[in-house]
Image (cartoon, rainbow, N blue to C red; front, side, top):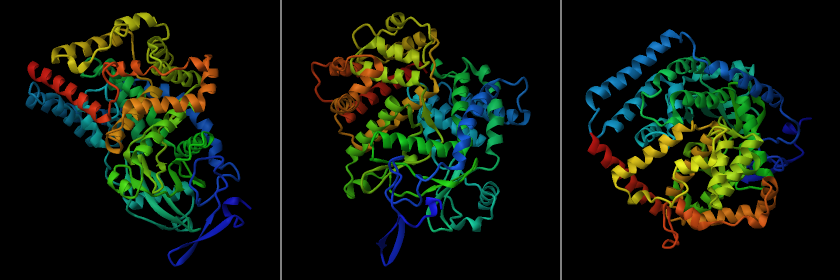
Length: 549
C-alpha cells in the first residue's frame, strides 16, 4: 500500500474538543517541509514528476520560435495592443509631456494600459516592477501596483478546468472547495479546499485559455519590440527585444504546473541539504498535479507585511530577515536553485518564525558555469576585487564573452576613487548616470534571466529590510553573512573556485566605498540611513528633470 494512505505512521493530537490524525513527518530528509504532513513524499516518485525534464527540454526548443518576430502578427490582438498603447502615449503627449510630472504621468498611463490589455501585460508589468536601476523609478513604482489581485475567473469555469484535468467529478476528489479564491493573479487563482480524505489543501488553477493568450501576446510583442528600440526611455540593459526575451523565458515555465510542483520539490531539497530548517515548502500532492491544476498542502501564518502582528506574537523580525538573506544566497551560490519571485504575496511567516515559501512558477536554475560566476561575484564583492566582479558578470552573460575586462573597468570609472552620489549636484549626477549607461551600451550589456531573478530578489530583500529591520546595521549584517559563508562553506567554496581558504578576507572598507561612504569616518550604517541617501539622490534627479522641463 502507498505510504500516502498507510495508517501505520499516523499520530493523534487534541485540537479543541476533537482528535485529529496526522502523519509522522518521515520525508524531512528529502525536503524542507512542515512537521505535520497531510501526506508523505518519501514513498515513491510521483508519476507527474517523470514528465518534467522532457517538458523543460521541449520548452527550450520552443522558445526561439516564440521569439521570432512574425511577418504578420495576430491582427486583431495587434490592433488592440497598438490602440491601447497609442491612446495612453497620445494622452500623455497631449496633456502631460513637458510638465514637472511628465515621467510619472507616462508611467501611470503605461500601467493602466497593461491592466487594460490583460494577464500577459500585467505579468510583464510585474517583471518591470522589480527592475529598479534598469527602468525609470517612476515606471517601477507604478508597475508595483500591478501586484494586486486581478478579477477572478467565475467559479463554474474553474470547476470545469479541475474536472477536465483530474478526470473526475469534483465531488469525488474534494469534500469541499471554497468558491471564492484566496488569490487571483494573472496566470492562475488559488482556492482553499478539503480532500475527501480530510486533508486541508489549496488548489491552484490556471486561467482557462491563458496558454493561448500568452502565446498570442508573445507573437505581438516579438513583432512590436524591434520597432520600439530607441523610442522609449529605458536603458539598453532592458531594451525592448531583450525584455521580451526575458519575459518569454520567465512566463513560459509558469504555464505548466507540473514544472512548478517539481520546482517545489527541488527548492525543498536544497534547503534540506543545507539544513536550513527555517524555511518551509508546501508538499505538492503525489497524484493531483496536472498542467493546469496543482493541489498542495495548506500552510498558514502571518502575512509578510503584517510586522506588528509578528512582533506581538514574539517573532524576531530581524532574525527572519537575516535567515531569508542567507538562505537565498546559499541556494544561489551553492546549489544554483532558488525561488525566483520573492515578494510579500509569495511568502508568510509561521508563528514560530519560520518562513513559508509559496508560488514556485518562477524558479532560478543556474548552469554550473553560471553558479560559479555568481560565487565568484560574491567572493569578489566581499574582497573588493573589481576585475573578478566584471569577469563574473561576463560569465553570467551580462557582458559579451570577448569583452576586455580592464577596458570595462576604465570606461566605467571603477579604477578611480569611489564617487559619493549624494555629494553631486543634480546635473553632475545625471551626467554620471548617463556616462555609465552609455559605456554599458557600447559593450552590449544586457540583463540575462538568472541575473534578473537574482537582482529582483535582492530588491525584495532590500524592501523587506525597511519593514522588518529598518535600524539594521548593514555593515554588521554583511560581516555576519560573509562570516557564515566562510565558516560553514569556506572549504567547499575555496575548492570550487580553486583558491586558498585562508586568502578569503572580508574587505569591509571596500564594501563601504561601494556605498560611496568614507571608510575612515563611518563605522555603522543603518538601512534607515541608506534610505535617506536614496531619497536625496531621487530628489536631485527630480530637480534636474524640473529644470529641463
